[in-house]
Length: 81
Length: 142
Image 1 (tube, rainbow over the protein chains, first blue to last red):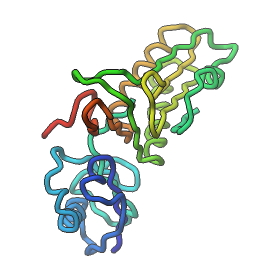
Image 2: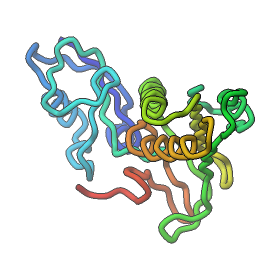
Image 3: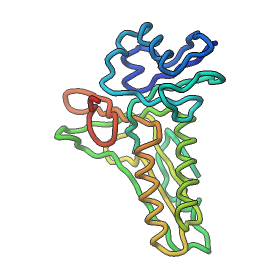
């Protein structure tokens, strides 16, 4: 299956990318997707924090299934306000 | 009214959006860009957002505050893009019949916004720039 990813703030700067797509096996989880992104963008191996995860714009866990998920966002700890 | 906007926040628009004749108290929280942070002189900020999700999260906060407090309406506006020192980056406005509920709802909404809404600020200061990630401080290793 194909999943779209989004990266924000320091994560997108480290990767040099803000979004893209990854093809994964049907039973893949968020953690598997992140593993693919770290292979593609090695700078993501050292983020300095554990990114927050959003599946289709809802906060989700690292072991969430990607079945029926179109977009996964990896978010640094937020700092709005 | 929930807005993530590139243009200046106009407080009077938010007040107008929440005020009506049944509600005699309007509480306002306005966050503005400070000229210093953790001992350095700040020049300006740039805000980045996961736009659609940020709007959804702000809507959730509004709905939760409306459930939790006896308020009539709540409006939230947050800026995106570059902000100069002194500009308003965020505004929360709540209206209630009496003052306590509006003030509590306002406090709840801004506290929650800082925890859950996917927006990040990059600080440009004398001698460098840095993403602020996590509430208030510089990048904190986990």
